[in-house]
Amino acid sequence: MTILKAIPILVAAFFLGNWFLSEVRKAKIAGKPWYAPYLTIPGILILVVFMIPVYLRFFH
Image 1 (cartoon, rainbow, N blue to C red):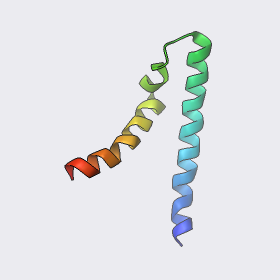
Image 2: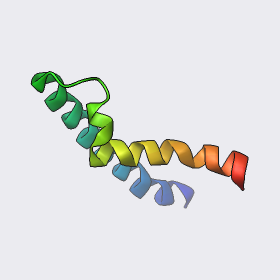
Image 3: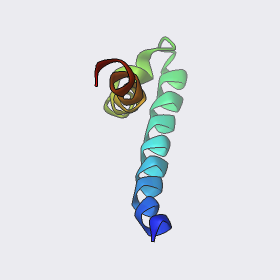
Image 4: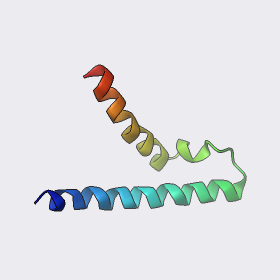
């Protein structure tokens, strides 16, 4: 039952990761700085996801 709950999360992570990697490839081809992909929608979503444990640890 727990595995069935994890499947949608893993699928969403897969799609978000692929979306972010496509933004990274576009930025490299365009010669943009290393941080440019993090300023796109998938980059911001990834940063928010990484900050959730920090928030829960220090502010909850």
